[in-house]
Image (cartoon, rainbow, N blue to C red; front, side, top):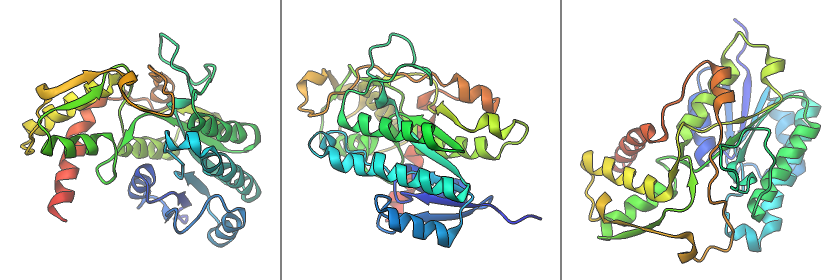
Length: 304
């Protein structure tokens, strides 16, 4: 039996990286490095790790994702989202390994009235989106073997994110206000990891055709942040979570009521037909993953 391939995961302490490590463990030799263990912005450190690990696949889950902070700290966003990606891409080229990278729906401006396909014109509205697009473009122009997955509204049970903040607030407040004029697709980090794993491990298709591609990776459907909060609290209530604020107590507001330094696209729905066709499956609607999130969150809290 041949040796298992080695997968190096950067940003292994983040939402996507943590789930990648969990899902890939068993079928690959997984080496996950947190942002403290590997600063991807340091080219010398990256080269040193590659020389030591000799990975077959590099999954870059490291990213600067503070959208509002990036407006005042664009150099920090560029360091992780572009310069570090450039180092990883160049090193993967040298070591002849596949680079898997995660992008964002924020590379689009939200002006389209239909879902965005992978080949649609990009036009990021904020510094975060521009830094991510620069990394994407460098990979596309310079990499020998790559996969880029565009994600949206990512969450998991073990991190601070929109659903965890909503649940925490709902336990102590009797009313919440949530914006209803930003539209996207809530995406479970576990969903991301499982489908990336399947794309890489499923046989049959020509790898050269499958690789060197950008894929929109989100569940089906769309929602506003308000819709997300309503559905989350409705399911949490049904599952017995102790909530002071119920779904009917959430009030919709407009984005203009929030003091957000970074401009957000109002509606970005990613067309995910390409990856569903590649995998030969049909994804569930976005809210089908909420119960799993809540159950995992419950188990985590019971073990604290």
